[in-house]
Length: 96
Image (cartoon, rainbow, N blue to C red):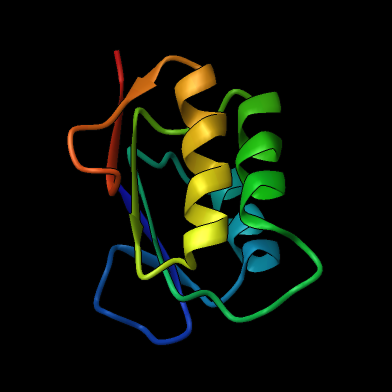
């Protein structure tokens, strides 16, 4: 199931406005695609959220970073690549 984290609902299978509510959904549902589109500001950072997912073995094999700040994208890209993900376009990350 796709989980979309964004400020607005886009009609995804599951959606959350920030990382804190996304954690609840990931604990309750299996997620195969994680897509992030302009989440609302929260105490949690993108890399902190990805690390939380990875630590609980629920980081999906496909992560899509749409409309994320360039600083967050750079940090998330480094984090994902260091964990075996590859990207053809710096937006879609696939675990190989």
